[in-house]
Image (cartoon, rainbow, N blue to C red; front, side):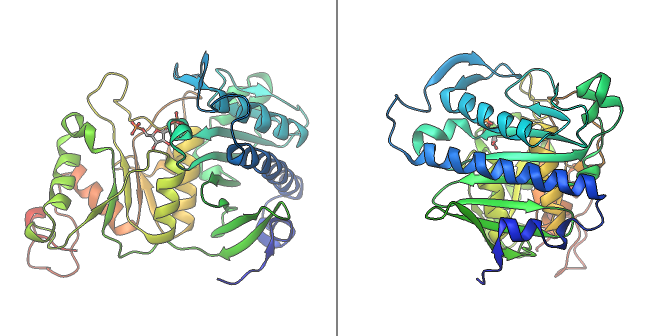
Length: 352
Ligand code: AFP
């Protein structure tokens, strides 16, 4: 892969052309500050645990009532401070109940999951930070939560940092997606590739299969047909991967294709799946669309949803466009589109 510069040069290029000047400057400032916070977090994650296990419980709970880990709280402090420094107007985080007004003169609103995949901390698997940047709207001044009542399609930028074998940043400003990797010797994010596209052909799916019995029939049928592999209606073998942190599962899909599903299911509290619209599904959906893929709630485009509450959940199906469309057909109980077998109209006889 060819190197084209750094995060700084990317932010100073024309990636934000078309965004009003003040907002473009604010987006660049917020991403620069978040990159600083991500650098600190990646150093912390990679440093031996001098003060006990970072995955240890902190004894508190987040907005959803999930137990918080020590690193969740450290990440929250780092990113909240970074975005306050950047002068963002409204701030919403998975780790806090209410949205806040940081700077009434600010022109952008940022929703963030400061530490995605907390259950991976103690097993040394990838974790990340996901962010979504909207233009500030006047309704948010009196009530900061209202700053986020915009469809995902309004996002000015979105992305995630992933702390894995490499610390990387995957980001979009609405004109394709960019992959940057942290050079930990210089502390700078180096641009590795612009215009990353999700490969279409990968026969790989990601879903937490332990929930099979709770899924709707449509999702069970889709996965059944994948599991049957070459002996089933799809006529090809599939591979399955589930890291359990959205950043890692998404990163893999952006790099080598496939599909990710976290559907709504029958468990109490999971009717709308597990993932949060504002700081998980929206940014991942924006990246997916910008890399030639798609993201739906099974049927409808994630980016068209207008949120009604800051921490609301949404089912997420994301990945290569043809696969996301195929899942949609299962949800609608229609015959999925076929490329190779136009004569076989029913789902059970199709190949892709
Ligand atoms: P946390 O942000 O609370 O660590 O949750 C991670 C996550 O929201 C997402 O990253 C994973 O895809 C999903 O949860 C995994 O959920 P299951 O444990 O139900 O498979």
